[in-house]
Amino acid sequence: MPAADVAEVLALFAEWGSQNYDEDVSQLDHALQTAALARAGGADGALVAAALLHDVGHLLELRDGGLADGQSDADLGHEGRGARWLAAVFPPPVTGPIALHVAAKRYRCAVDPAYHDGLSDGSRRSLVRQGGPMDAEEAARFAAHPAHADAVALRGWDDGGKVEDLDVADLASYRDLLEQLAR
Image (cartoon, rainbow, N blue to C red):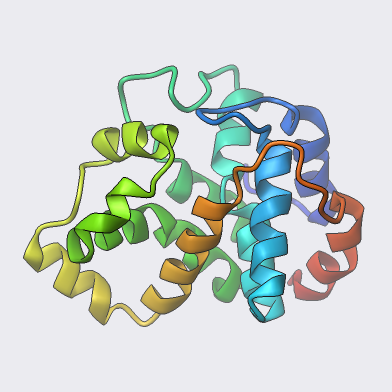
């Protein structure tokens, strides 16, 4: 079942956001830090919301009794699952970058091999599960996608949003933005 409304999305964070995934910060801390970086970077509201919600697929996996990312040898496809779940509530400018943020990591590793060195240990491990760096043909297709720039920007904030004990705005501070963007 897709998300019904913003309240259901926020409830998912309230229930499962305290869980860690394959990093040293909680799901909620990571989401809030990623969104704070997007805001600081001058992103529009839809991209800030995408930054906040980009890993909701991990929370859905936990909600449904599955494993947290990093506890499985298989790629759980959290980016697609999250984007599909959110699509009933949010428009493509929010869900598109979410659906592409893993591809953006693979792309960045392909076009800038030094980018890989800056990834967290968890992101390096998940990169292997997610197919590794794109080949030249995949990278060219990704670069031609109309939403690739937003996905690459989101990926950068995602990479930066993994700092322990960082003080950022709380989840409630995003409610109005999410309500404004909701269909």
